[in-house]
Length: 205
Image (spheres, rainbow, N blue to C red):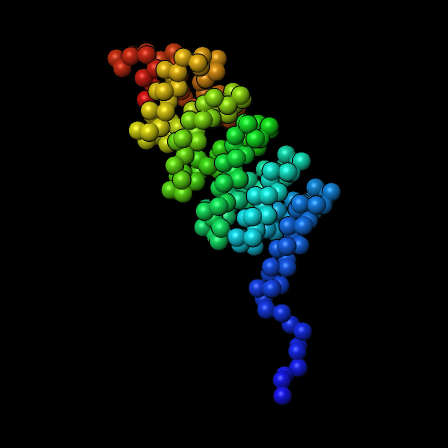
């Protein structure tokens, strides 16, 4: 005789349903507060499905604040090496690109997440940061220089050197003479007017 069905479902089923519900709220709710809580909830769930839903939402999200929340959530998933962490940095990589993300602050937060991921050996941040040297936002260019300098690797120094030698870039494209830029909060000490025994721009290397 078969035991009566208690009506209970395995925890994984409930979890999957909960994640799907959060994903639906994040993708479809008109309320910013609801979408924010949904993104945070997906971050706490930290599953492959969470990463998939967050990544999908980031590309279509209208609110700048929510896009930043999603970037931060994906950053946490990758840093904690939760399930799906290897895919969690794909969306911030796209969000750091000014061809796909129009808002400067979102690109900055995504770039910071990628740089910090590099410090944790989750990826090589130098190619990503080098692309930021031609971002249309001076703030992003300043931040990229600062991050490359703090990275301190030979590859980072070479990237800065290539930027200086790039004839398509002018000093207006890259950081101007006076540093640090306290108003931008970049903390950068890169100087184009440095000269010395090492030649012009020695602090870039």
